[in-house]
Image (cartoon, rainbow, N blue to C red; front, side, top):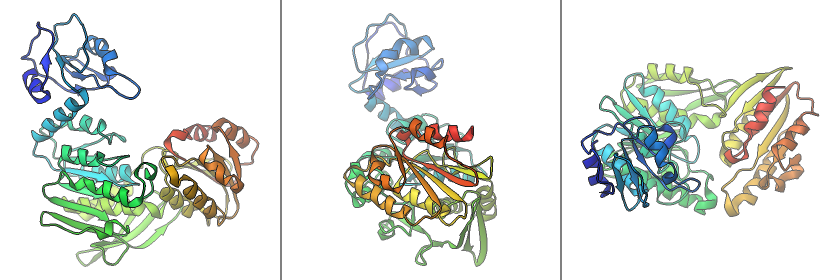
Length: 444
């Protein structure tokens, strides 16, 4: 992309007269620390940082052009492009970048399991195609443009995760990305504090269709909301799950402490799927990824091999063997009611002592008390357990075990406990930083 095209797309104006406009831009960055020679730096005004404060740093690192929305005075020969909004310019540039490439894009959203589903789909498709996949949880109005700026002509397919915490956000991402295939994992309670109800979450998640002119929607057909979706003339729907009304049906589901297995039937033949991650609650993510693979003509035998060898991201259902016959389940990356109940189901009937370390589930708003009390009631059904709670929201269920105000207080208590012959679960919302507790446990 050259400077003139950037000015046109952003409807900007050059504010310094001495510049070279014929040079090509290699990449577009919003983080000055990651700027390389030949990049365009867009000075985004964020909640914590203002990109305008880092313009000189970007120039010193070799930026070829700068986009700003504030008046700045710099003695530089590289073009400074003034726009009305640097954020809108970022979106417009990402939209233009997407429009240049007629490459199929798969968008994934849902309350739980987005990242695992995205990574599974990426791994399956990579056996045949050159896949561009959104990194980590770069799944919002800032992260998705970063992915689109990486599109090259040799990419065969794009896999992108869409997150949200308010109405309209997924609609924006869908219109920006124009998906050919959309995947919705489930409708749960995550972000219900912002949204107000599960029905509103359902409405927000189905905004993933807003940018689809035509294509295929693949959903968890066991979900009470998603199973009600109807096909249109241009959007076909494939439903997956255990329910016999689904198009791709899971059966004979089994979960041990180191893997989950189930069966599917395709072309009058039965196939056994082995997913080396424990937890029945994860199988809907797997079946959705299988269906995407089939849609893209990946042989089922290849899909099965990929799933069997798949490694889940750090801090998501990581099983770690400690000393003295103790097993740590590190699931501290994030938490929701649905995912917590899923992992509690996995451990509740295990004969070993269970040490359940739970942090707050955040962003529940007025539903926080109700949902945490439901968790408290569920914990009563688990035998041979010690429950350790941390945070303001879990205080309401402190009678379930021991409550602490900080992670360090909890760690000090752990130092006095006999942790041998135990299963230790650590789970909480991202902001609870329970990796501090996990790190202590790894070092005992």
